Image 1 (cartoon, rainbow, N blue to C red):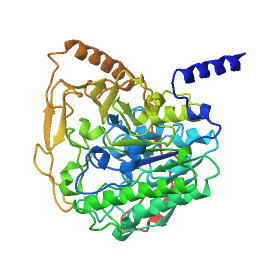
Image 2 (tube, rainbow, N blue to C red):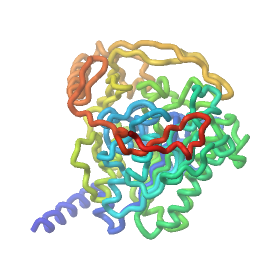
Image 3 (cartoon, rainbow, N blue to C red):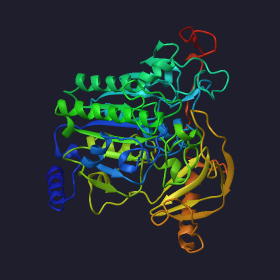
Length: 497
């Protein structure tokens, strides 16, 4: 009887034009590919207004798929953003903030369900190629979080001794194959090959797993400084090295799409292309652009946390369409769960299923009343529909000055903003406060913020919150890397006492 009722309900949904999740509409589970750029700004690809170089592979992806103009990350910095993407939670909830470096003793907790853990329920093959940045000790590496394969670097490519502005004491940058260090001293010549290597591995993975569902997470180290590009694209753009690097990343996307088509998997595969945060503006000609948004990486203005996003799935996601409803990386985990009929974790997550937005349901709206933006442990702003409310906080800015040149950054200065309400529909650049004109909107958003503070806390108001979960920590008997400068990396694995 229950099955009959469900069948009738699904038929009624189809008759009313509501798109069904593919796990219901088709027997084949969809392949999932998430391409996660590093420090790519809102205006850094063709569909979002890039100038000075071409993105001939991302452009058709946008034409054949759906562009998300109001897509956000949880926090405008590396590790925090990745934690939100992979767990479906605000990063503050899972205890990951900032950018974990080589001295960090924490990582993603074993109890957190990642996107890879989720799809493993349905027998997916899983791989990550590129930058991990959620803990570099063995217990935190991707193979402990649902991934069958890992080939890449443990944290950002500037966390090494050769970056012009590197802090003293960084050890050589290692390259991992699963849990083994296969290159103890990544060089600039190696970094020139990163985009190629990680792309080739992704294409190989598609070939090897074409007969089963697979999930590829491709977190490119680029376009994070220091910038490196292979000979294939060196000197190809009018924008200099930055443009060359974006062109190579665009080539990478094209290689993956071509492989899917060659294996007749394009209509069975969903690609999500997005970024971990906005551009590192102090690097000037080695950084991208967030225009027309305000500020960039390291701030929770939209230039820092609103990112260029394309979703592509021929025949399922409507081609040539645009979604201007707010959405966030935390929504991918519950959305993927709905697509493949997988079970969500028992613990609290913050994301919600946004399949109706992705599928182009004309009546779909964001399932969230608001999205919340912490920087560190401070609740700095939230978005509710068209409105963005900032609470008083300080932030870094170039204050209209140009950034640096040749890979050497300009110093930021500190500025402050008071309680400010912006209408992002009429004022995408967050320039004009309209709080006095809309006191009822401010009051509601303050009420929502108080509810979030009770859950996740707020360092600005000295609230602790009750909904935190701890990150993973090294404990007695765990293996750890000391990574002492001047000593070989592959000799520094020891047991914690």
